[in-house]
Amino acid sequence: MKNLKYTLLHKDGNARYGKININGYELETPVFMPVGTQASVKFLDPEDIKKMNASIILSNTYHLWLRPGEETMIKAGGIHNFMNYHNGPILTDSGGFQVFSLKDSRKINEEGVSFKSHLDGTKLFMRPEDSIRIQEAIGSDIAMSFDECIPFPSSYEYVKDSVDRTLRWAKRGLEAHTRDDQALFGIVQGSDYEDLRKYCAIELAKMDFDGYSIGGTSVGEDKETHYKMLDYTLPYLPEDKPRYEMGIGAVNDILEAIERGVDMFDCVLPTRIARHGTLMTSEGRINIKKQMYKNDFTPVDSECDCECCKNYTKAYIHHLFRAEEGLGSRLMSIHNIRFLIKIVEGAREAIKEDRFSAYKKDILTRYKFDERGF
Image 1 (cartoon, rainbow, N blue to C red):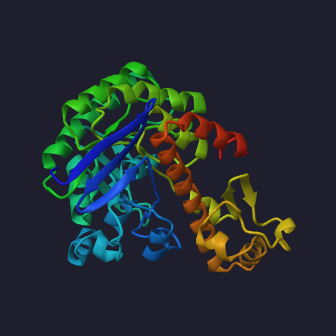
Image 2: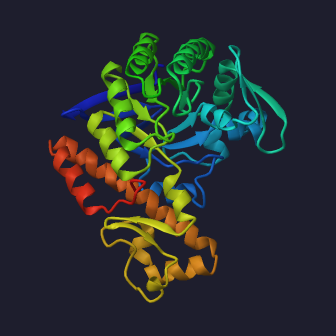
């Protein structure tokens, strides 16, 4: 793809600082991507996203295929025009994770996957070529190969067969891809088997994708296994291409991945927990529903520069949540996303100054984790 260029500018150990240029947009890496599943980051508009310094967002192929559909996306002139978002590039996942999460209805064969729509039960079928066609209709700047997100745990035999099929699907998707203005990433699978991760990464690298995603992590495995999956994968990915770990939003997971050489992350976590009254702060998580915040007129986080923290208090956010006012969810979502973006911005600066290890230690020491790691 001629329009995507990744430049590795500095390394601190394996941690990487770089830049991605694509379709006239430039973004620094490492980077956290807010998720706009249905062409909308929940409760936020493009100006909100711009103010929190988000340089790229993610949307979902499966959901946009079901509604509004390919025809509407084409008539709109693509997703940027459809959602009036022109502040940065948009990445789409392949739809694979959503399809494979519909485990009660899905059936896999060499051609693709049959499953039922979660909206109305309609029988559907998706092939690698379909995923690429839909993403081209959506008009994202970066598209993903169609793969199987392997459940954890799985037997060696199952994972080997799945990886081989995912590699065949990756080749089919690459051959079906026609847009010169859209990058295409391959996705490495292999569960927690070192040789299969290595094999998948090496074979995908031979196909010369524009970038590489690490899939099949954060699917139920413990932290030690999660990080081993990265260790089994990253040494075999090209240094001159961006590396993206999918579905990662916990602070410790992001920092561990950056330390190992990952460049891009996305997760619904910040907006999802915001809608339930949970805020991520420099001193750990807080639950704004608690009565202790009713008369707390301090910012959510004194170290945060987001619109929520600059202009409102915990008492007001507590009131909005208790009153079920939508503004509360919007302000909490702004804060949580900006919090993660700010963590990653700090990581970039630390890498440039060869102090990432100290930065990571400081963040993890100050940030109070619960048993899930965020």
